[in-house]
Image (cartoon, rainbow, N blue to C red):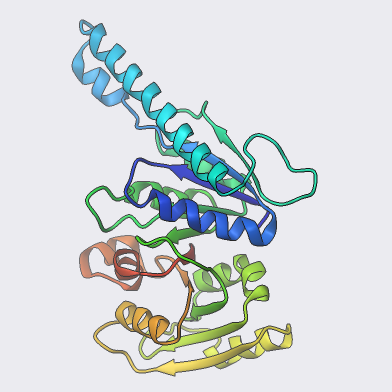
Length: 279
């Protein structure tokens, strides 16, 4: 986890995303890159008509001011936590830089994230000014890399007690593989399976034995479903004292989750701990 990306959106949850990234960076002496999430004004400008150059100028001014605010927020937050910005420390440890020249729109974020071990974003589903779901889904489906979704409240620690929401799917297996550096440093790992959630594949006990063979302090827990799979996962994570939940994202189709709901949708809306996800 040596390279971390933090898309910067103006949101009430940005401090939690920054704090989550800092906690991971301190453990792995990571490079942190801030990237301003720039809205794509092309459609709005086109709708305004060629005869309104003042509209284009206004969009440009707002865009530049947004970049400046994002840069200041990122730099001040990290300097206040003694993480150098734009200078790699000689003695090692985390350091950071801000990328201001990113093009507008979400497409670039998904592409750029392919260079990073992990991208950290805020939870998109709650609050008056939450991060946009489009950014998270672009990262999950276009980057090929994992995402850490920070909860509304800034966490004090990440990855000491890890809960793996195991359902035997390829998405969850891939997510566990991506999270291996964090799993290997954990004090306690619980492989949680919920009644009715498993697809064809290895059981939770088999996953646990594979982790134990690798020297990871894991144990299995199978529980009945209570109200719903997502609800049960979050209840058990809280009961177990988990400070990081590992979950494959959208192991059933996005459309089905939008219409009928699903574990991923519920967890994205209601988790109070950081959630490590990949698709």
